[in-house]
Length: 577
Ligand code: ADP
Ligand code: MG
Image (cartoon, rainbow, N blue to C red; front, side, top):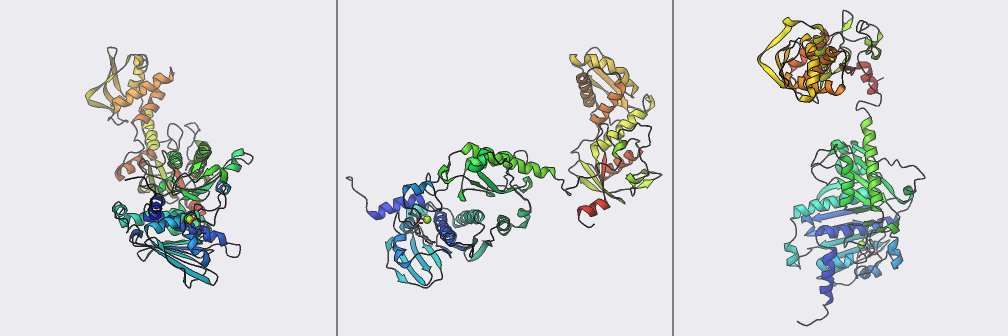
C-alpha cells in the first residue's frame, strides 16, 4: 500500500478518538459547552441557569444535555459542527487567557464522528435544529424551543465495533458520568444541575450559588455537617496571596471513604484529576484518616490564567500549573490549619469543661488538708458524709476503652480508668508500707534479669522494695528473684512492671525517696491501661476503690481521675438557658 492522504471521515474518527474515548467524554464536552453558554448569558437579573443531563444505558444508547444558555443562531448551527469552529477564542493569544471551558472547537465535530448527533437551539424566538447521521450533516430544519440548546447523542460507537468492544459496562459508565456531573455541579454551584439515568433522577442542585447547598443535595446533610470551610491563613501582603487563591470545603477526618470519589479538585473552576494534588491533600490527613481510607474534600485553586496550561491533555482533564510546588504547599498548609483548628474545639461546645469535679486548687494541697469541701465547688455532687461518692453512680459504659461514663444526680461523670486505678494502687501501696502480712506469695518465684546497667539501681532500691511488701533478693549479679508481691498490686505482669520501673529509676538518676518513687512507678505500670476492655463489675469495683482512696481527685501525675459535666453545664451547652 502506497502513501496517501486519508479520507476526511477517517481523519475525523482518528481525531475523535483522542477526545471521545467513552460516553462520559461526550457528556463532559456537552456539559462544558452548556456551562459556557449559561455563564455567557448570566447577569445580575438572571444570575444562574439550568443544565439538564440525561443518559440511557450508561450513555451508550442516548445522552441528552440541555441548557437555557445563550443559544446558537439558526444560520450558525452547521458551523458549530465543523472542526475547529468556535465562538470562544479568536487568536493564539486568547489561549493564554482562557475564560471559557471550551476553546478548541472540535468537541461537537468529534462526537459527530462517532455517534449520531442532533442539536436544537434557540435565541429568543429563532429556533432551529440540525442532525448528523453517519457523520453526514443534514439540512437546518425549523424547530420550536425555548431559549437555550439541547444536544442529543445517539448510539455512540455503534459504527465502530472495535471501539465498542473495549467499552465498560453501562453501570460502570453511569457511575463515572454521575461523578463527572457531580464535579461540575460542585464547581459551579450557581448553576442548577440535574442528572437522570434511565429516567431516574440521580440528583439535582438548586443553583443557589452556595457550595454547602450543593453538597447537601449531592451527598446529603450528614456529609455537609462534617465539612469544614478551608482556612487560608496566609497574611495579606504575602506575595503568593495574589497569584494563588485556594478555597473549598474539607471533610472532618471522620468522614473517610473507601475510594477517592469524594475528592474534587478544580483549577480556575475547571475540574481536574491530579495525582499530586490528591497526594498533597491526603498527606495533610495522615494519622487522622485510617490507612487505606480517603478523605472528602472539594477544593478550588485559582491562578492567573497565563500560569495555567490546559492544552496538555486531549480532554483537558489534566492541567499544568506553573508553580505546582507552591500550590501543593499552600494546599497542605491550609488543610492542616483547618483540621488543626477543628480539633481544638471541644465536641460538646465551645466553652471548656470544668477541669475536674474536684476543685483544682486542691490538687496541690498537702495530703492532710481536707480534699473535699462540701462547699460550692461540689454542690449537687453525690455527697455522703461531706464527701463525693462515686459508688452510687449508674454506669452507662466505657468509651474509647479508656473512660468510664456514668450518670449521677449532679450530671454526667467521666472517669479515666487508668488515672483512677493508678491512684487506687498508689494509696494502697502507701497505706501498707511494710505490712508483710498483706504480701501475696507467688506460686513460683519470678526471676527478673538485671542487665549490667541496672545492677546499681537494683541494689539500691531492694530494701525499699521489701518495705513496700515485696520479698525480693538479688541472686548473683544478674537476677532479681521475687517471691512475694504486695497484696495491693495485681501480681500479673509484675516482673515486667518491675523491670520497667528499674529502667525508669535508672534513667532518672539517684533519688533519696526510693520508696515513694517506686510506689508511684509501680502503681502506674501495673494499673489498668487505657484501651483495656472492662466488664461492668470491674468498673463498679474501680469506682468503689476510688471512693476509698483519700487523694482520689488526681492520679499520681496530677491528671484528674474524673470530670463532671453538670446538668447546668449541659443545659448551657444545649442553649436551654
Ligand atoms: P468549543 O467548545 O471548543 O468552542 P465545540 O465543538 O464544543 O467547541 O462547540 C463549537 C461551538 O458551538 C462553540 O464554540 C459554541 O459557539 C457552539 N456551542 C456548542 N454548544 C453550545 C451550547 N450548548 N450553547 C450555545 N452554543 C454552543
Ligand atoms: Mg466545547
